[in-house]
Length: 259
Image (cartoon, rainbow, N blue to C red):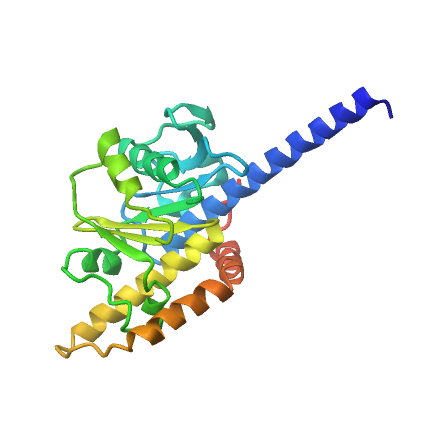
C-alpha cells in the first residue's frame, strides 16, 4: 500500500474507532439514567449526568432537557463544548446542568464522569451539619477522605456558581455534598460513577435509619476507616460487573436505552 493510502486508511480507522467509542459512551450514559430511575435516584425530569467525550477534554456528553430518566435513550444524549454549543445531537440543555457540568469538567479534567442528583437519603444528609459519617458503616468507609461539603450558593444558573461548584472537586474527591441541595459524584467512567452513586445512597440510607433509632452511631477507629477506603479504591470491587448487572436488569425490564 502506498504511504498516502496507508495514512488515509489509518486516519479513517481512527475516526471510525472514535465514533464507535462515543456511541458506546452514549449508550452507557443512557443506561445509567434508566438504572437511576429504577432505584428512585431521579427527581422529575431534573438533575443531570455528564461524561467527557473519550479522548477529549473540551467536549462532554449531557442529557437533553425534557425526557424522564426512565425513558432516556442514547439519542437523547447531547455532545456539548465548553462554550455551550451543541456539537452533536438534537435538543437543548438545561442551564444549571450546563453550568454545573462545565464547571466540573473544566476545573478537573480527570473528572471524566459527573453525576448530579437530589436522591433522597444523600440529600437528607446534605441538610444536616455533619453529613455522611464515613466511619459508621462499611459502605460509608469507601468514601472516607474522599468527600467534601460545599455550602449552598443559590441556583447554578450562571458561570460563577458553576465554577464555584467545580472548584470543590479536589484531586481525591469522589463526592461533593452540595449542602441543602444534593450531591455530585465523580468517576473515572460511567461504571465507576454508577457504583459510587449507588453505594453513596445506600450508605446515606442506612445512616438515616440508624439515627432514627435515637441512638448514637458506632464509629470504627480512624486507621481502620483509612485502610478500608484504601482497599475499596485499590480493588474497585467490581464496578464494571455491577453496571453490567444493572444493564441486564434494564434489558429485562426497560429495554430501548441504546436507541
